[in-house]
Figure 1 (cartoon, rainbow, N blue to C red):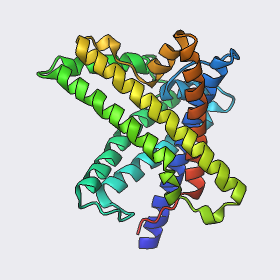
Figure 2 (figure 1 turned 90 degrees about the vertical axis):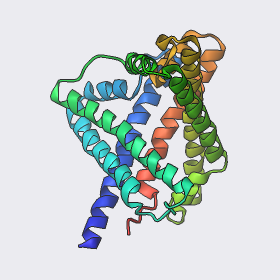
Figure 3 (figure 1 turned 135 degrees about the vertical axis):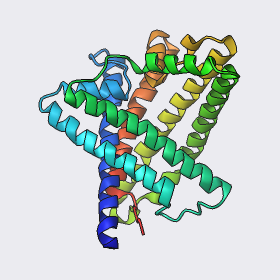
Length: 270
């Protein structure tokens, strides 16, 4: 019975990483096409899901993404509650790690819900940037709201620098079955992992900077989602276009990194 449950957990996790990879590959591809004036658009995960839905057999692919993202959410909550990988969850670092898993699960739960709504034809048209500004305004309306928004911005910047460290230290390699890869596969898995994680780190840092700006000016319209960050970079030439190209290609690489995780990540829910 235990082996059966463990097998299902592994399957859910791998489907989840694959679905997440598909979303990020789409986001990165659309942004990259925009950079090189080949169509495309700077969009978020919800925009990527809409793009997937519009493709031939898009509804089938979107259904697969819904199932996969649901698996990813369940895997994150299992990590948060059960600590199946036995990563010393009793110390402060472990508590924060498990809290991070839970938050990540909630975030991708929202993305999975958006995908399900699109699949059922009930998805809304509100952009993620508008949604970010609405939530920022709600937080700012609370006592000490600007301080909370500013703290959130500082947290995002700190998270971005932490991911920079993880990228340069190639910490992600510790979770991969490198012994199942050829030397060439290992080399490229490392390269796309570093590039992809660095791109996400830069996005987190920029989002955090905008949140701090929103808090300082008491203006929720200054807040930006990942989609908003890409749009701002697109509008600021020439430096913005260079950074946009790096992030676009990096997000595509991050999607490939998630597909590598789906295939080669060590998942041992014992």
